[in-house]
Length: 307
Image 1 (cartoon, rainbow, N blue to C red):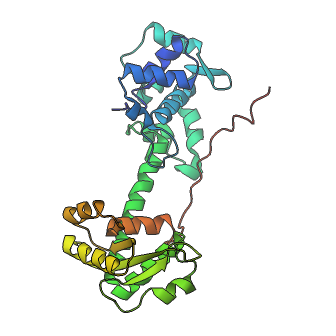
Image 2 (image 1 turned 60 degrees about the vertical axis):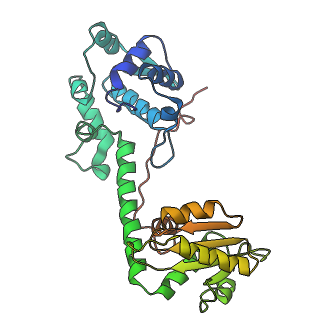
Image 3 (image 1 turned 180 degrees about the horizontal axis):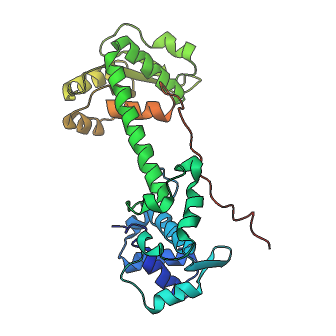
């Protein structure tokens, strides 16, 4: 398990004190010290923009530098300050935000990082971090993930409240947004027709119409699981048309038996349950719109490189 960034502060300080001056080597030493596997080191933040371990080491270094225990003598290189050496001469059991507050200027510098536009005039980053084990970026990612999950649930609820015809239209819109069907006009010519022998419609796989995908769309309540018989009927309809590709979409769920069944087919059949359908709607901006944007900026190292 990857330690939180405050737990990493003392080990990072000791590693830099041993002469390691770059993040890559610090990360290797930390991984060895805490017996982290390659899988642990590869674990990403929810945003998938940075490994969790690298992010936590970054914030441990940031706070140690704010307290004046570390300095950066040159780009991407770190070294102990006199205060840092003094700390290591008589090291505490743990360095965390509360410990770093004893160093002059730490709180003041951190309030500048927060700023009125981010956390409000009376709130500083240490106040937030002192009660959490997550780095600021992890907290932002966690908040984003919570908002994303709430939106997914709301989307699914709205789909279940609307008519089956509306759901079929939503399926069309999503597939077009994902690059299938060519255009709304072309897709509308083949989808949304009266049901025909277990198939609700078809759509071109590519804009030239070289291959076609048959579709089944079922708007069911979330507790109404779709079992293997329904999926078999859809596959039978595909076979009857000489088709090799199909998508079965529902607002509910598929039973484990149904999921296992499609894995053994010679035809390529994709099952999309309500949760996945809502996730894809969010990813491809179908039925949702941007409500707020927050830009997180970092130092541009190239800007400050003099040589």
